[in-house]
Amino acid sequence: MPSTYDPLLRLELQATGENATTWGTKTNNNLELIAAAIAGAAIVSVSTGDTTLSTANAATDQARSAILVVQGTLTGNANIIVPSEPKTYAVIRGTSGAFDIAVKNTGSGANLPASGTDIIICTSTTCYALVGALDARIAAVSASVSALNVQVAAVSASLSVLGAQVSNIATSVSAINTQLAAVSALVSTINALDIRVLE
Image 1 (cartoon, rainbow, N blue to C red):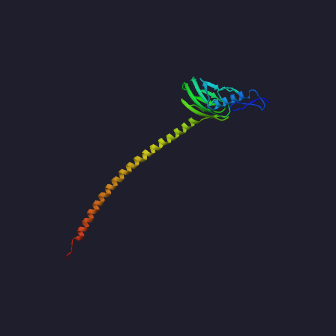
Image 2: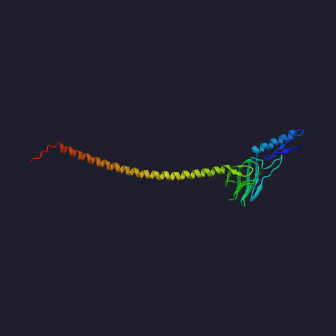
Image 3: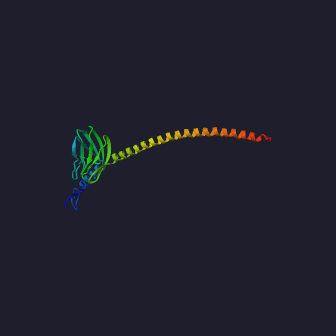
Protein backbone atom coordinates (compact mmCIF):
# COMPACT_ATOMS: atom_id res chain seq x y z
CA MET A 1 0.00 0.00 0.00
CA PRO A 2 1.50 3.38 -0.97
CA SER A 3 1.69 6.46 1.28
CA THR A 4 -1.37 8.67 1.75
CA TYR A 5 -1.65 12.27 2.92
CA ASP A 6 -3.64 13.73 5.79
CA PRO A 7 -6.24 16.34 4.71
CA LEU A 8 -5.36 18.97 7.33
CA LEU A 9 -1.62 19.52 6.89
CA ARG A 10 -0.96 17.28 3.86
CA LEU A 11 1.68 15.26 5.74
CA GLU A 12 2.82 11.95 4.29
CA LEU A 13 1.27 9.00 6.10
CA GLN A 14 3.56 6.10 5.37
CA ALA A 15 2.13 2.65 4.91
CA THR A 16 3.38 -0.17 7.14
CA GLY A 17 6.64 -1.59 5.81
CA GLU A 18 7.02 1.13 3.16
CA ASN A 19 10.08 3.37 2.65
CA ALA A 20 12.43 1.12 4.60
CA THR A 21 15.53 3.06 3.47
CA THR A 22 13.95 6.56 3.38
CA TRP A 23 11.68 6.39 6.42
CA GLY A 24 13.89 8.75 8.46
CA THR A 25 14.08 11.35 5.68
CA LYS A 26 10.33 11.31 5.18
CA THR A 27 9.71 11.55 8.94
CA ASN A 28 12.06 14.52 9.24
CA ASN A 29 10.26 16.17 6.33
CA ASN A 30 6.93 15.67 8.11
CA LEU A 31 8.38 17.17 11.31
CA GLU A 32 9.58 20.25 9.38
CA LEU A 33 6.13 20.67 7.86
CA ILE A 34 4.53 20.38 11.32
CA ALA A 35 6.93 23.09 12.56
CA ALA A 36 5.79 25.33 9.68
CA ALA A 37 2.17 24.70 10.64
CA ILE A 38 2.92 25.74 14.21
CA ALA A 39 5.28 28.69 13.70
CA GLY A 40 6.12 29.11 10.02
CA ALA A 41 5.40 32.25 8.00
CA ALA A 42 4.39 32.58 4.35
CA ILE A 43 4.32 35.75 2.25
CA VAL A 44 1.06 36.25 0.36
CA SER A 45 1.07 38.88 -2.38
CA VAL A 46 -2.31 40.40 -3.26
CA SER A 47 -3.60 43.17 -5.51
CA THR A 48 -7.27 42.53 -6.30
CA GLY A 49 -9.63 39.58 -6.72
CA ASP A 50 -8.88 36.08 -5.46
CA THR A 51 -5.46 34.83 -4.37
CA THR A 52 -5.53 31.12 -3.56
CA LEU A 53 -2.91 29.87 -1.12
CA SER A 54 -0.66 27.18 -2.51
CA THR A 55 -1.10 23.61 -1.23
CA ALA A 56 1.20 20.64 -1.71
CA ASN A 57 1.32 17.13 -0.33
CA ALA A 58 4.46 16.52 1.77
CA ALA A 59 6.08 19.74 0.52
CA THR A 60 6.31 23.38 1.59
CA ASP A 61 3.23 25.46 0.80
CA GLN A 62 1.53 28.69 1.92
CA ALA A 63 -1.68 27.22 3.32
CA ARG A 64 0.11 25.13 5.94
CA SER A 65 1.92 28.12 7.51
CA ALA A 66 0.78 29.46 10.85
CA ILE A 67 1.48 33.09 9.89
CA LEU A 68 0.41 34.82 6.69
CA VAL A 69 2.26 38.04 5.85
CA VAL A 70 0.01 39.83 3.36
CA GLN A 71 1.81 42.26 1.07
CA GLY A 72 1.13 44.24 -2.09
CA THR A 73 -0.59 47.34 -3.44
CA LEU A 74 -4.34 46.89 -3.54
CA THR A 75 -6.16 48.08 -6.65
CA GLY A 76 -9.49 46.62 -5.52
CA ASN A 77 -11.02 44.38 -2.88
CA ALA A 78 -9.09 41.14 -2.46
CA ASN A 79 -9.83 37.63 -1.17
CA ILE A 80 -7.29 35.20 0.23
CA ILE A 81 -8.66 31.73 -0.45
CA VAL A 82 -7.64 29.07 2.10
CA PRO A 83 -8.37 25.32 2.00
CA SER A 84 -11.74 24.11 3.24
CA GLU A 85 -10.21 22.46 6.31
CA PRO A 86 -10.04 23.64 9.94
CA LYS A 87 -7.00 25.90 10.48
CA THR A 88 -5.98 28.95 12.51
CA TYR A 89 -3.91 31.72 10.95
CA ALA A 90 -2.18 34.75 12.40
CA VAL A 91 -2.48 37.31 9.60
CA ILE A 92 -0.25 40.38 9.34
CA ARG A 93 -1.50 42.97 6.87
CA GLY A 94 1.21 45.07 5.27
CA THR A 95 -0.58 46.28 2.15
CA SER A 96 -1.20 49.73 0.74
CA GLY A 97 -4.45 50.88 -0.85
CA ALA A 98 -7.79 51.51 0.83
CA PHE A 99 -9.54 48.28 -0.09
CA ASP A 100 -10.89 45.30 1.85
CA ILE A 101 -9.12 41.97 2.25
CA ALA A 102 -11.11 38.89 3.25
CA VAL A 103 -9.78 35.48 4.27
CA LYS A 104 -12.27 32.84 3.16
CA ASN A 105 -12.87 29.31 1.97
CA THR A 106 -16.37 28.35 0.81
CA GLY A 107 -18.13 30.71 3.27
CA SER A 108 -18.42 34.47 3.54
CA GLY A 109 -15.02 34.80 5.21
CA ALA A 110 -13.46 37.25 7.64
CA ASN A 111 -12.40 40.80 6.82
CA LEU A 112 -8.96 41.93 7.91
CA PRO A 113 -8.57 45.26 9.70
CA ALA A 114 -7.28 48.15 7.58
CA SER A 115 -3.90 47.83 9.25
CA GLY A 116 -2.33 45.58 11.81
CA THR A 117 -3.01 41.95 12.56
CA ASP A 118 -5.82 39.51 13.22
CA ILE A 119 -6.28 35.90 14.23
CA ILE A 120 -8.39 34.07 11.67
CA ILE A 121 -10.06 30.82 12.70
CA CYS A 122 -11.36 28.73 9.83
CA THR A 123 -13.73 25.80 9.92
CA SER A 124 -14.27 23.60 6.89
CA THR A 125 -16.97 26.01 5.68
CA THR A 126 -16.09 29.57 6.74
CA CYS A 127 -13.55 31.80 8.52
CA TYR A 128 -13.92 34.10 11.52
CA ALA A 129 -11.86 37.11 12.61
CA LEU A 130 -11.15 36.71 16.31
CA VAL A 131 -9.59 40.14 16.96
CA GLY A 132 -12.01 41.95 14.67
CA ALA A 133 -14.97 40.39 16.49
CA LEU A 134 -13.42 41.37 19.80
CA ASP A 135 -12.84 44.93 18.57
CA ALA A 136 -16.50 45.16 17.56
CA ARG A 137 -17.59 44.00 21.01
CA ILE A 138 -15.21 46.47 22.68
CA ALA A 139 -16.62 49.26 20.49
CA ALA A 140 -20.17 48.25 21.50
CA VAL A 141 -19.20 48.23 25.19
CA SER A 142 -17.46 51.58 24.76
CA ALA A 143 -20.61 53.04 23.18
CA SER A 144 -22.70 51.67 26.06
CA VAL A 145 -20.28 53.15 28.61
CA SER A 146 -20.41 56.49 26.79
CA ALA A 147 -24.23 56.46 26.89
CA LEU A 148 -24.10 55.51 30.57
CA ASN A 149 -21.73 58.42 31.25
CA VAL A 150 -24.25 60.78 29.65
CA GLN A 151 -26.98 59.39 31.89
CA VAL A 152 -24.75 59.66 34.96
CA ALA A 153 -23.99 63.29 34.07
CA ALA A 154 -27.75 63.98 33.74
CA VAL A 155 -28.43 62.34 37.11
CA SER A 156 -25.56 64.31 38.65
CA ALA A 157 -27.02 67.57 37.29
CA SER A 158 -30.44 66.62 38.67
CA LEU A 159 -28.91 65.84 42.06
CA SER A 160 -27.15 69.20 41.99
CA VAL A 161 -30.48 70.97 41.37
CA LEU A 162 -32.13 68.86 44.07
CA GLY A 163 -29.29 69.73 46.45
CA ALA A 164 -29.87 73.43 45.83
CA GLN A 165 -33.60 72.98 46.48
CA VAL A 166 -32.90 71.06 49.70
CA SER A 167 -30.55 73.87 50.77
CA ASN A 168 -33.29 76.44 50.10
CA ILE A 169 -35.78 74.35 52.08
CA ALA A 170 -33.28 74.07 54.95
CA THR A 171 -32.87 77.86 54.94
CA SER A 172 -36.64 78.33 54.98
CA VAL A 173 -37.03 75.78 57.81
CA SER A 174 -34.32 77.62 59.77
CA ALA A 175 -36.14 80.92 59.29
CA ILE A 176 -39.42 79.32 60.39
CA ASN A 177 -37.71 77.86 63.47
CA THR A 178 -36.37 81.31 64.34
CA GLN A 179 -39.87 82.78 64.05
CA LEU A 180 -41.34 79.94 66.11
CA ALA A 181 -38.72 80.55 68.77
CA ALA A 182 -39.67 84.25 68.84
CA VAL A 183 -43.37 83.38 69.08
CA SER A 184 -42.61 80.86 71.81
CA ALA A 185 -40.63 83.49 73.72
CA LEU A 186 -43.49 85.96 73.33
CA VAL A 187 -46.01 83.38 74.57
CA SER A 188 -43.79 82.69 77.57
CA THR A 189 -43.57 86.42 78.31
CA ILE A 190 -47.33 86.78 78.06
CA ASN A 191 -47.86 83.76 80.31
CA ALA A 192 -45.52 85.24 82.86
CA LEU A 193 -47.57 88.43 83.15
CA ASP A 194 -50.08 88.44 85.92
CA ILE A 195 -52.98 89.86 84.01
CA ARG A 196 -56.26 90.11 85.79
CA VAL A 197 -59.37 91.08 84.09
CA LEU A 198 -61.29 93.60 86.11
CA GLU A 199 -64.95 93.27 85.96
